[in-house]
Length: 113
Image 1: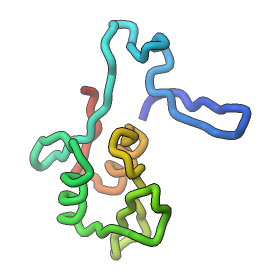
Image 2: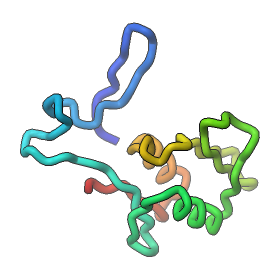
Image 3: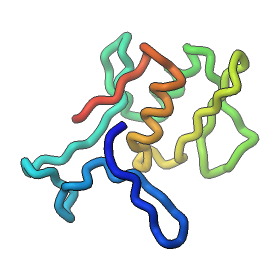
Image 4: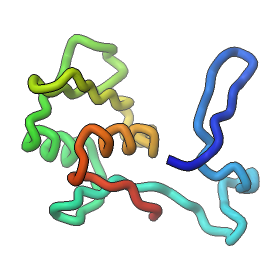
């Protein structure tokens, strides 16, 4: 994961992936650097939670319903890992993508779009 962690006065932190970008979110070349989650066995970009849930279910992950209602959560009986994602797919960013990659090695990869 690359970028800069920005700490605010109220204690909130966030990852800025391209700290040198101008205010419009573009890098110095003038193109946006959006990240995508790729399912390596099929080489397909994960474009929805429906497709992600199908893949995770096939890998032994199950929906976890005891957490925050604002999150989609998945857990595996064979581990203590928990994947937590924002319910709104438009908020699914590289931080969540890398969490999935770390918990599913050799299955997913994060790429620049």
